[in-house]
Length: 81
Image (cartoon, rainbow, N blue to C red; front, side, top):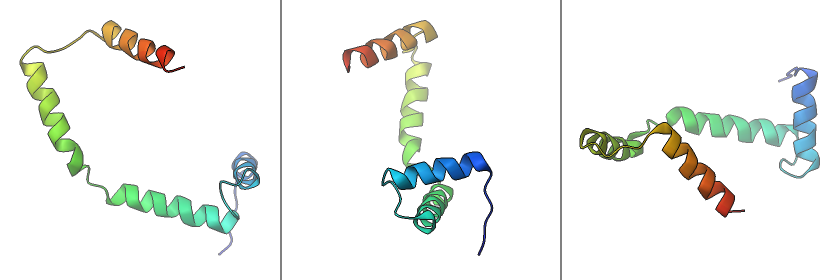
């Protein structure tokens, strides 16, 4: 099979091969397709309990404002550095 890539994608792919992330173009294509196939097969059922817990917490009024959430994320990010 022959494929054609736009120059930007080819540069990206070659850079990732050069840094050792992929052994070859064939390896990259196989791995990227396998990852996408796994993503397509995931029905996200594992996330349902988390979503249910979050909805129940919101129904109880256990929420924070968007500004508070962003501040918490920024604080966690800066303290991890």
